[in-house]
Image (tube, rainbow, N blue to C red; front, side, top):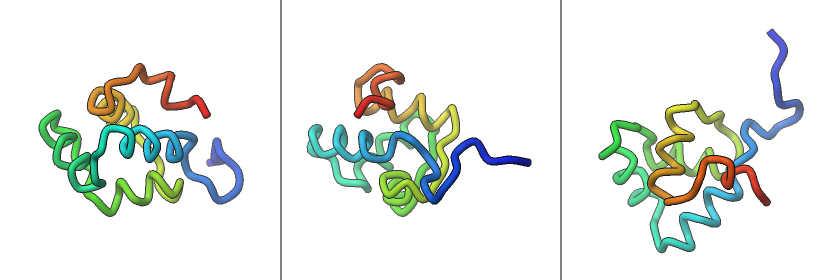
Amino acid sequence: MARIIDGTEMNMIGDRVRELRLKKGLSQQALSDKLETLAVYICRGSVSRIEDKRRTVTDIELYGLAKILEVPIESLFQQ
């Protein structure tokens, strides 16, 4: 099966997630903990890999990230 994203980047939102997380004053662990309250399980290491674009993001995870970071989903795709 062909990949949607060519190259080494596995997602399009990593930089924006990092930016918004830092703006809210959250550590990667705190973001992980808050996601867990929504039954979205992304460990601290996976948050790091998302931000480094070394991990894909599922639709459920995308929803949870947008909720916790208090932004519309589409804003995660803005630079």
